[in-house]
Each structure stands twice: as C-alpha cells, then as structure tokens.
Image 1 (cartoon, one colour):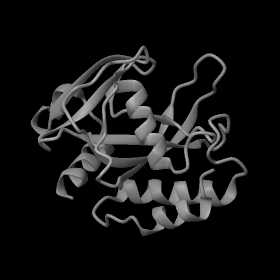
Image 2 (cartoon, rainbow, N blue to C red):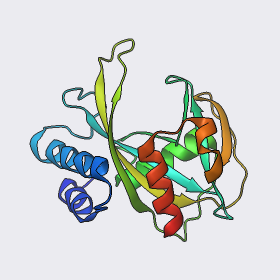
Image 3 (cartoon, rainbow, N blue to C red):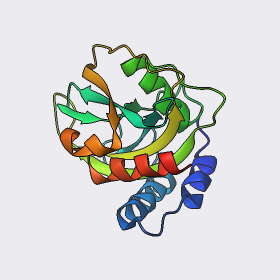
Image 4 (cartoon, one colour):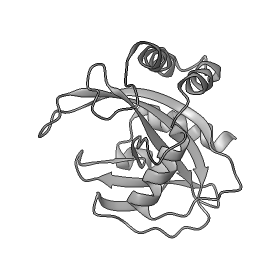
Length: 183
C-alpha cells in the first residue's frame, strides 16, 4: 500500500524553479493527493489519478528507452497505473510497467529518482471518460540494452537526445530526460 503522506513529501521536496509547467503539475498532484478519496485508483476520473512513468537510461547513459504506445499511437516513456496490491511506491509502479511493457532489466543498485511531474489529459475511450494522469516520472538505468516488446506496445527503441524531434516527445518528457542524465 502506497503511503500518501510520504508521496506528498516526495512531491513537495521536488523542485525545478526553471520549469513552471512542472511546478503547476506538482501543485495539481499535491491537491489530488490531499483532497480526493482515491488518488491512486485508475477508476477515479475526476480529477484523475496518479500514474508512474520510467525514464530508463541506456547503460552508457547516451539514450533513453521509448515505447510506441498502442492505445495512444505515439512514442512515450514506459509507464502506467498504480496496482495497489503490487506497488508499495509509485517508483515501483514505474519499474513494474517498464518491465511489463519493454522487458527491460533495470539496475537495482541505483535507487529511482523523481525527475519530473506532468499532469496531462488522456482521451476518452471505451468505458473511460477523458481524464487526467498525474504522472510522476522516475529515472532508472537499464542493466543492458536488451528489451522485449509486449502486446501493449507497437515498438521499442533507444533514443539519443539529438533524436527527440524525430519521436515528437512532449516537453515534460524532454525535461525529465535531461534531469535524469544530469544526476
């Protein structure tokens, strides 16, 4: 079970004064955690729910792992919903989702670091209305360059920083990646 006060503390301590968009996302995540009954439930659509994303550095630290998301039809970092019975922290959510989606082995000797916060909209589909993902982005490093795509993704690639434009990565992901590489 994820400790909400500890998660609030982690979010409150994270700061990048040069990133106003992330600051607003941080405020929204804090409000979600303080004011809603089930902020970690994937079934809380108003105002949304917390998700975990993995920014996985290649072992050489020269690129990051991207997944071509099947449902959203775009290149993103691996990540997804909190599973209360599996995840003791949102960083564990990010790690688990990366391993499920990409079959990547993550270096367990390096602790995950919060490198970004991004609140973004998810389009309505099937039984889910439009809602917000309050995304916490954690940095990890892969043990090797090997990966294996799951049915959830259309493709996987290691993307060098200079190729971000080719994959049309959103600004919050770009900033999180740069923070990951700086640590």
